[in-house]
Image (cartoon, rainbow, N blue to C red; front, side):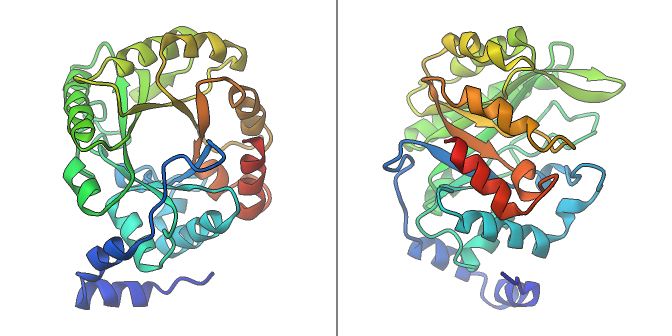
Length: 292
Protein backbone atom coordinates (compact mmCIF):
# COMPACT_ATOMS: atom_id res chain seq x y z
CA UNK A 1 0.00 0.00 0.00
CA UNK A 2 1.35 3.42 -0.94
CA UNK A 3 0.65 6.22 1.54
CA UNK A 4 0.27 9.79 0.25
CA UNK A 5 1.46 12.09 3.01
CA UNK A 6 0.46 15.03 0.81
CA UNK A 7 -3.17 13.87 0.73
CA UNK A 8 -3.25 13.38 4.50
CA UNK A 9 -1.74 16.80 5.16
CA UNK A 10 -4.20 18.45 2.76
CA UNK A 11 -7.18 16.88 4.52
CA UNK A 12 -5.80 17.90 7.91
CA UNK A 13 -5.22 21.48 6.73
CA UNK A 14 -8.47 22.03 4.86
CA UNK A 15 -10.92 19.70 6.62
CA UNK A 16 -9.83 18.98 10.20
CA UNK A 17 -13.41 17.94 10.97
CA UNK A 18 -12.80 14.89 8.76
CA UNK A 19 -11.16 13.13 11.70
CA UNK A 20 -14.30 13.27 13.86
CA UNK A 21 -16.46 12.37 10.87
CA UNK A 22 -14.35 9.30 10.15
CA UNK A 23 -14.51 8.30 13.81
CA UNK A 24 -18.31 8.61 13.77
CA UNK A 25 -18.57 6.44 10.63
CA UNK A 26 -16.15 3.73 11.72
CA UNK A 27 -17.57 0.22 12.02
CA UNK A 28 -16.89 -1.05 15.53
CA UNK A 29 -16.57 -4.54 16.98
CA UNK A 30 -16.44 -6.20 20.36
CA UNK A 31 -13.14 -6.19 22.22
CA UNK A 32 -12.99 -9.98 22.18
CA UNK A 33 -14.23 -11.57 18.98
CA UNK A 34 -15.35 -15.13 18.39
CA UNK A 35 -11.84 -16.49 18.92
CA UNK A 36 -11.67 -15.03 22.43
CA UNK A 37 -8.12 -13.86 21.65
CA UNK A 38 -6.54 -10.48 20.92
CA UNK A 39 -3.75 -9.61 18.48
CA UNK A 40 -2.98 -5.88 18.74
CA UNK A 41 -0.29 -3.98 16.85
CA UNK A 42 1.40 -1.28 18.95
CA UNK A 43 2.66 1.98 17.48
CA UNK A 44 2.70 4.46 20.35
CA UNK A 45 6.50 4.62 20.66
CA UNK A 46 7.20 7.84 18.70
CA UNK A 47 5.24 10.12 21.05
CA UNK A 48 7.62 9.20 23.87
CA UNK A 49 10.61 10.02 21.69
CA UNK A 50 11.39 6.32 21.29
CA UNK A 51 12.10 6.17 17.55
CA UNK A 52 14.85 3.56 17.35
CA UNK A 53 14.52 0.07 15.93
CA UNK A 54 17.64 -1.99 16.51
CA UNK A 55 20.59 0.10 15.36
CA UNK A 56 18.42 2.49 13.30
CA UNK A 57 18.05 5.52 15.56
CA UNK A 58 15.14 7.16 13.69
CA UNK A 59 13.44 4.22 11.99
CA UNK A 60 9.98 5.12 13.33
CA UNK A 61 10.35 8.79 12.40
CA UNK A 62 9.30 8.17 8.79
CA UNK A 63 5.52 8.50 9.08
CA UNK A 64 4.68 7.25 5.58
CA UNK A 65 6.77 4.13 6.14
CA UNK A 66 5.22 3.54 9.57
CA UNK A 67 1.69 3.94 8.22
CA UNK A 68 2.39 1.57 5.35
CA UNK A 69 3.67 -1.05 7.79
CA UNK A 70 0.64 -0.55 10.03
CA UNK A 71 -1.80 -0.87 7.15
CA UNK A 72 -0.12 -4.09 6.03
CA UNK A 73 -0.21 -5.50 9.56
CA UNK A 74 -3.88 -4.51 10.08
CA UNK A 75 -4.85 -6.18 6.81
CA UNK A 76 -3.55 -9.60 7.90
CA UNK A 77 -6.07 -12.25 9.02
CA UNK A 78 -6.27 -12.57 12.78
CA UNK A 79 -5.07 -9.05 13.59
CA UNK A 80 -7.68 -7.48 15.85
CA UNK A 81 -6.54 -3.88 16.16
CA UNK A 82 -3.99 -1.21 16.94
CA UNK A 83 -2.63 0.75 19.90
CA UNK A 84 -1.33 4.25 19.17
CA UNK A 85 -1.44 7.95 20.03
CA UNK A 86 -3.95 10.38 18.55
CA UNK A 87 -1.87 11.49 15.57
CA UNK A 88 -1.23 7.94 14.34
CA UNK A 89 -4.79 6.72 14.97
CA UNK A 90 -6.23 9.73 13.17
CA UNK A 91 -4.01 9.10 10.15
CA UNK A 92 -5.28 5.51 10.11
CA UNK A 93 -8.88 6.73 10.48
CA UNK A 94 -8.46 9.00 7.46
CA UNK A 95 -6.97 6.08 5.52
CA UNK A 96 -9.97 3.89 6.39
CA UNK A 97 -7.71 1.29 8.02
CA UNK A 98 -9.62 0.97 11.31
CA UNK A 99 -12.90 -0.55 10.14
CA UNK A 100 -13.98 -3.49 12.33
CA UNK A 101 -10.79 -3.12 14.39
CA UNK A 102 -10.17 -2.66 18.10
CA UNK A 103 -8.76 0.84 18.57
CA UNK A 104 -6.76 1.54 21.73
CA UNK A 105 -5.69 5.06 22.67
CA UNK A 106 -2.32 5.55 24.38
CA UNK A 107 -2.74 7.86 27.37
CA UNK A 108 0.53 8.77 29.09
CA UNK A 109 3.53 9.58 26.92
CA UNK A 110 5.10 12.34 29.00
CA UNK A 111 7.98 10.19 30.28
CA UNK A 112 10.24 10.92 27.34
CA UNK A 113 12.89 8.30 26.69
CA UNK A 114 16.18 9.35 28.30
CA UNK A 115 14.76 12.42 30.07
CA UNK A 116 15.55 13.22 33.72
CA UNK A 117 11.75 13.22 34.25
CA UNK A 118 11.18 9.90 32.45
CA UNK A 119 9.53 8.25 35.48
CA UNK A 120 7.13 11.17 36.00
CA UNK A 121 5.10 9.83 33.10
CA UNK A 122 2.38 12.45 32.79
CA UNK A 123 -0.83 11.92 30.87
CA UNK A 124 -0.13 13.87 27.70
CA UNK A 125 -1.99 11.62 25.25
CA UNK A 126 -5.59 10.46 25.09
CA UNK A 127 -7.88 11.40 27.96
CA UNK A 128 -10.79 9.11 28.86
CA UNK A 129 -13.21 11.64 27.37
CA UNK A 130 -11.27 11.62 24.08
CA UNK A 131 -11.46 7.83 23.83
CA UNK A 132 -15.19 8.01 24.50
CA UNK A 133 -15.79 10.92 22.10
CA UNK A 134 -13.97 9.23 19.22
CA UNK A 135 -15.74 5.90 19.85
CA UNK A 136 -12.47 4.12 20.44
CA UNK A 137 -12.57 0.82 22.27
CA UNK A 138 -9.98 0.94 25.05
CA UNK A 139 -7.08 2.85 26.55
CA UNK A 140 -3.58 1.95 27.62
CA UNK A 141 -1.25 3.43 30.21
CA UNK A 142 2.38 2.80 31.14
CA UNK A 143 3.28 2.48 34.83
CA UNK A 144 6.99 2.29 35.57
CA UNK A 145 7.85 2.27 39.28
CA UNK A 146 11.36 3.14 40.47
CA UNK A 147 11.50 3.04 44.26
CA UNK A 148 14.27 5.67 44.17
CA UNK A 149 12.44 8.14 41.92
CA UNK A 150 9.62 10.31 43.36
CA UNK A 151 8.25 10.80 39.85
CA UNK A 152 6.93 7.25 39.97
CA UNK A 153 4.51 8.17 42.75
CA UNK A 154 2.99 10.97 40.66
CA UNK A 155 2.63 8.56 37.75
CA UNK A 156 1.03 5.97 40.02
CA UNK A 157 -1.50 8.42 41.42
CA UNK A 158 -2.50 9.75 38.01
CA UNK A 159 -2.75 6.17 36.72
CA UNK A 160 -5.22 5.34 39.50
CA UNK A 161 -7.40 8.29 38.53
CA UNK A 162 -7.29 7.15 34.89
CA UNK A 163 -8.50 3.71 35.98
CA UNK A 164 -11.42 5.40 37.75
CA UNK A 165 -12.29 7.65 34.80
CA UNK A 166 -12.20 4.81 32.27
CA UNK A 167 -14.31 2.57 34.51
CA UNK A 168 -16.92 5.32 34.84
CA UNK A 169 -17.26 5.17 31.05
CA UNK A 170 -17.20 1.33 31.02
CA UNK A 171 -14.11 1.43 28.81
CA UNK A 172 -11.37 -1.20 29.18
CA UNK A 173 -7.97 0.08 30.28
CA UNK A 174 -4.77 -1.87 29.66
CA UNK A 175 -2.17 -1.14 32.35
CA UNK A 176 1.47 -1.89 31.49
CA UNK A 177 3.43 -2.05 34.78
CA UNK A 178 7.15 -2.43 35.44
CA UNK A 179 9.50 -2.25 38.37
CA UNK A 180 12.27 -0.08 36.97
CA UNK A 181 15.62 1.40 38.01
CA UNK A 182 18.28 3.63 36.51
CA UNK A 183 21.44 1.96 35.30
CA UNK A 184 24.12 4.31 34.00
CA UNK A 185 21.52 7.07 33.83
CA UNK A 186 19.09 5.03 31.71
CA UNK A 187 15.80 3.50 32.88
CA UNK A 188 15.85 -0.29 32.79
CA UNK A 189 12.86 -2.54 33.44
CA UNK A 190 13.39 -5.49 35.77
CA UNK A 191 11.93 -8.63 34.16
CA UNK A 192 12.78 -11.01 36.98
CA UNK A 193 9.88 -13.06 38.33
CA UNK A 194 9.87 -11.19 41.65
CA UNK A 195 9.77 -7.76 40.01
CA UNK A 196 7.02 -8.65 37.53
CA UNK A 197 5.00 -10.27 40.34
CA UNK A 198 5.25 -7.07 42.40
CA UNK A 199 4.26 -4.91 39.43
CA UNK A 200 1.17 -7.08 38.85
CA UNK A 201 0.10 -6.76 42.48
CA UNK A 202 0.47 -2.96 42.44
CA UNK A 203 -1.22 -2.44 39.06
CA UNK A 204 -4.18 -4.67 39.90
CA UNK A 205 -4.92 -2.59 43.01
CA UNK A 206 -5.12 0.79 41.26
CA UNK A 207 -8.30 2.82 41.45
CA UNK A 208 -11.71 2.36 42.99
CA UNK A 209 -12.59 -0.63 40.81
CA UNK A 210 -10.65 -3.12 38.70
CA UNK A 211 -13.73 -4.21 36.73
CA UNK A 212 -12.47 -2.71 33.47
CA UNK A 213 -8.72 -3.17 34.05
CA UNK A 214 -6.56 -5.47 31.93
CA UNK A 215 -2.84 -6.04 32.40
CA UNK A 216 -0.28 -5.76 29.62
CA UNK A 217 2.72 -7.73 30.84
CA UNK A 218 6.20 -8.65 29.64
CA UNK A 219 7.32 -12.25 29.57
CA UNK A 220 9.78 -12.77 32.42
CA UNK A 221 13.49 -13.37 31.81
CA UNK A 222 12.79 -17.04 32.49
CA UNK A 223 9.52 -17.78 30.64
CA UNK A 224 8.96 -20.73 32.94
CA UNK A 225 8.24 -18.25 35.76
CA UNK A 226 5.17 -16.74 34.06
CA UNK A 227 2.67 -19.26 35.42
CA UNK A 228 3.58 -18.37 39.01
CA UNK A 229 3.64 -14.63 38.22
CA UNK A 230 0.12 -14.73 36.81
CA UNK A 231 -1.21 -16.34 39.99
CA UNK A 232 -0.90 -12.85 41.55
CA UNK A 233 -4.13 -11.54 40.01
CA UNK A 234 -7.41 -12.57 38.39
CA UNK A 235 -7.27 -9.71 35.87
CA UNK A 236 -7.16 -10.65 32.17
CA UNK A 237 -3.71 -10.34 30.59
CA UNK A 238 -2.18 -9.62 27.21
CA UNK A 239 1.53 -10.09 26.61
CA UNK A 240 3.88 -7.25 25.74
CA UNK A 241 5.86 -7.78 22.55
CA UNK A 242 9.15 -6.31 23.72
CA UNK A 243 12.21 -4.96 21.92
CA UNK A 244 13.58 -5.79 18.49
CA UNK A 245 16.71 -7.94 18.53
CA UNK A 246 18.87 -9.85 16.09
CA UNK A 247 17.36 -13.15 17.28
CA UNK A 248 14.33 -13.48 15.06
CA UNK A 249 12.90 -16.59 16.71
CA UNK A 250 13.56 -15.56 20.32
CA UNK A 251 10.41 -13.50 20.90
CA UNK A 252 8.15 -16.11 19.33
CA UNK A 253 9.57 -18.86 21.56
CA UNK A 254 8.91 -16.75 24.69
CA UNK A 255 5.38 -15.84 23.63
CA UNK A 256 4.40 -19.39 22.65
CA UNK A 257 4.53 -20.87 26.16
CA UNK A 258 3.08 -17.84 27.94
CA UNK A 259 0.11 -17.66 25.54
CA UNK A 260 -1.06 -21.06 26.76
CA UNK A 261 -1.61 -19.81 30.32
CA UNK A 262 -5.27 -19.48 31.37
CA UNK A 263 -5.34 -15.73 32.17
CA UNK A 264 -3.55 -14.71 28.94
CA UNK A 265 -5.90 -13.57 26.18
CA UNK A 266 -3.51 -12.31 23.57
CA UNK A 267 -0.53 -10.30 22.44
CA UNK A 268 0.31 -6.62 21.92
CA UNK A 269 3.44 -6.28 19.80
CA UNK A 270 4.94 -3.38 17.91
CA UNK A 271 8.43 -3.03 16.59
CA UNK A 272 9.07 -6.78 16.66
CA UNK A 273 6.36 -7.22 14.02
CA UNK A 274 6.43 -3.87 12.21
CA UNK A 275 10.23 -3.91 11.79
CA UNK A 276 11.14 -7.61 11.91
CA UNK A 277 14.78 -8.63 12.16
CA UNK A 278 14.27 -10.81 9.09
CA UNK A 279 11.50 -11.35 6.58
CA UNK A 280 8.50 -9.17 5.86
CA UNK A 281 5.85 -7.52 8.02
CA UNK A 282 3.31 -9.97 6.60
CA UNK A 283 5.41 -12.99 7.57
CA UNK A 284 6.19 -11.68 11.07
CA UNK A 285 2.54 -10.86 11.79
CA UNK A 286 1.28 -14.18 10.44
CA UNK A 287 3.68 -16.11 12.65
CA UNK A 288 2.53 -14.15 15.71
CA UNK A 289 -1.14 -14.72 14.84
CA UNK A 290 -0.37 -18.42 14.51
CA UNK A 291 0.82 -18.52 18.11
CA UNK A 292 -2.68 -17.53 19.22
